[in-house]
Image (cartoon, rainbow, N blue to C red):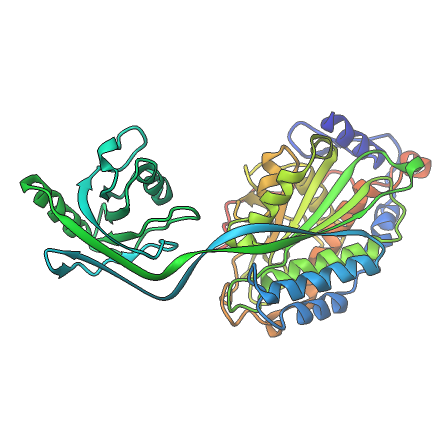
Length: 468
């Protein structure tokens, strides 16, 4: 059903996708170079980089780490702007769990000696004394019932830390000592919510010594952890919807997104107040535009915690919504003066898809790049690590818009307003805005008959990760 809707939208625009993702010939008729940008201009001529810059200034006035007051201040501002533009607006809260470390300390006493362990991130704070039992790598199905009431000695490797802890916890273990599987470090390990036993890390040499000691007989150990744990926090997605008039509604939905949270202690001017500013600006510009497709603008929380907001939002979509969403455009870090390097097309702007393949989003956007501020097709590449991922997994065409290589201020307190380039903001907003309007603008006989839509455009799929 989705493919039919996408094809209908492109036929309306005088475009047909060929099997290799490039544009093939649409309806016959002489192309009109001036008309080719007529519909783009209804959007791009209204886009203001100054508006976006001012939004970034407001959002980056304080860090916006997920679950903090700074995020909530940003969320309220974003929601107020959407409402001002006339959108049906929802603040969608969701819970997440975060490791806390406040004056963390940990000891592992065996035979009167402290092995000075590393406390796992998120380890439960407690003191336990019990017999030690070696359980190998604690893979499910291999942990004996006899570990109940004992401290499990575990080798790192093969499965995650959280899985190892859970496997011994399910059998009744009261603590975890995990030894490294390589090198000389003890600084590793992570626990999660509900794993209410202390968990610590030791070096490989220390662990192997304990394994040998157990061969000679049983012994007890005391683990003491303080200042560590898991806190429940709340983050938010902000969702804005604009439906067309009922008699013009073709049932399609097109989405535009960015994440509004930053890293702790980071103002996040580029990451990702820049993307959020473009979402708000395009929402403003399109608020009164004629459409036959629902516009849905979303800013996601807790992206920096592992795409938590976008996954939560994607999980709330109905089957009907998933079938009707024809494209998702994600903007992340689109405004840094210092990103992109030299010699890269369009200042280093690139579109990333999860599988590295072209799709509706990249086709439309590369064509838009050739006829808007960029002046050339935009290349595509393969990368996850942002909020386009859960939509791709639902089968929705999705792509991330970002500049590569990344700026040196990435994830630092120096990610501030002074490093923002208005020209880059304008460029990306024009490309995404023109692409979205290709889908959302209403059917018109003039468009069908005049063959005014952009013609075929070739663009590369390149191997250029953000750090390259």
